[in-house]
Length: 400
Image (cartoon, rainbow, N blue to C red):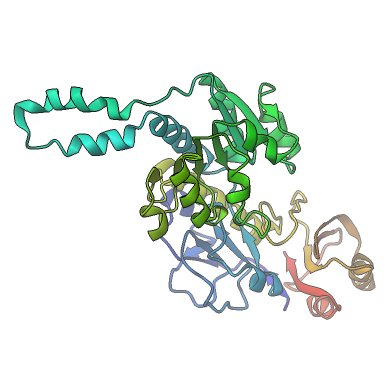
């Protein structure tokens, strides 16, 4: 179905409480915020479960104000030509600070010590003596000079690795998919691990910052625990399913794992000893929520107004500077001759192509074309429908 974007007011639906600073990105004369809309142009969401939702024909984009998109039916959106965005890096500092906080606090047995101290309430003048007598149970270790293994050196892992160096830790990192931009930001003093097994074997502390995929699910298991140093501390602020919890329980009981710090509590881990369960606070700061909301809103606005795509999880990112010319955008399957078919139809309208970009990602591709001609009227008659009828086209738009 072809959508012609003119000067009409566009509707943004919110499914969670979104920071006001993010909503302010949308010009009030061009956009309306309506959390009851049945057919919005875009949706901004945090954790709301969207898997049972039906989407209207106007919906062009869904922006997740956060990193994970498990609450969004991405495959369904792709089939309908709906771009799904996330906001990588917007909450990175918040997560980094919590990783380093729990790294130090757990190493010093701070959480257990605080809990024990609270049990002394009501002991009156005996509290100081009891504290002095009992504190030996909570003797911990300093992190200075210890080795931190960082698995995944993206937005969060990069910051953790660099700051851990400033805390006088030795840092070893592993990420076979590290981007050029991220590599430039990573300190040269971070030792590069050639294999993930090297991280397992050499680290006193391991923090993981990778997405949940079929390959990473249960990556911490009996086999990998056996590669690690006795008493290793494992920090998981990515996804609970990265850990095989039955194997983790055995590793803790045997002393192979000294502490497990997780931001994803459930009944299993709450029953384990030497587990620090945090109530999913990784990105829960005022600053992080604002950063995510602003970034999500800007990405949606850019899609609606120019067709440019940045930080999509289901379609290729593509950017063509918008000069105000009539713009044709086409989401399509990544198959031979698609660009030729698209440009052939445009040329049949005697339209000149001023500029064009085509990007692919796996089975899908995205083409943006700017038209050089002056086009009178609101619509180029029939162009959108012809583009939609090309076998393999998912969604075509004309932006004017």
